[in-house]
Length: 411
Ligand SMILES: [Zn+2]
Image (cartoon, rainbow, N blue to C red; front, side, top):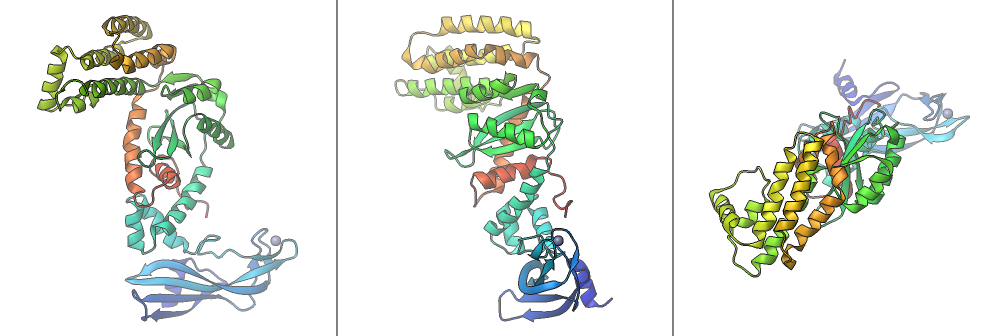
């Protein structure tokens, strides 16, 4: 085995292909190593459709980017034939070292995919020496193929949530399998609300899933979701979103009241924190001050805090009783002040969705999953930075959290 054979093996070059030449171009920076591959004279090639050994009709030269050879960029050039199959006509063949249509070798793409599993695409692109746009095209190809292979035949319970690729910009909606211990993402689609549910149903059907087998859907209370999901699936409103809705109402009240009265500075962050979150001393003081004050923000806050007590109910009957008490108590606390309108609105929405909210007490599925998604969304945003749009963002969510398996299994 000589040096050429070693290189040929690494490239996946198999007969009739062989390595016929190599040349280092030192006129460019970094230097370029050019490897030339050719087929043996008179060799037959498989028709790309039926595989029948056929004569070459004609040849055209192609170049692929290969893994760097030490510090040198490496390129492979070969004259690739078109076969003339009696049945399928004149067609360009696929070479064993690259996939159809790609200007990179399989080994190059394998290393690229390995890197983007570990670091932001921009950083991986710098290491392998191509632009991030070109690397994104590779990533989108392999992730797209893997997503096509997803098997949803056993999907029984899902939850969905939406998030923006960039602040205030276009949304993606993410569907997760509530029974998956890790890699729970099964579908990501641009957009939000109703149309995404229709897209999910189509995706589900293409991947062996059956809507009637989905026994539970956990989502927030946005009207569009419920209208769309409720028509097909049984819906549980997720508790995390209930808390979020009331937290926002308290903050809206605080904002409006701050225009009339001076409120402690630390109050804003104290009331935005999760109910069980840790508070700084200043925040704890601000809350203590709030509790003894006659502020309308204090009323909104007390109503929101009752959610904690409801959540601890240990069964659906107890929860129903606590909620009845909560609604009565909240309406007593709520004065007619216009500033409290956001809380009244949240309460109306809560009452409206009461049965779906109560489902969580008879559900087998943890609501913690949706809260965990926020961490995933943040990670995906960071990995896609520099070239972030709904497509790259969705691709990265799949890459980080969908059961995609081995990207190169079918090649
Ligand atoms: Zn053929």
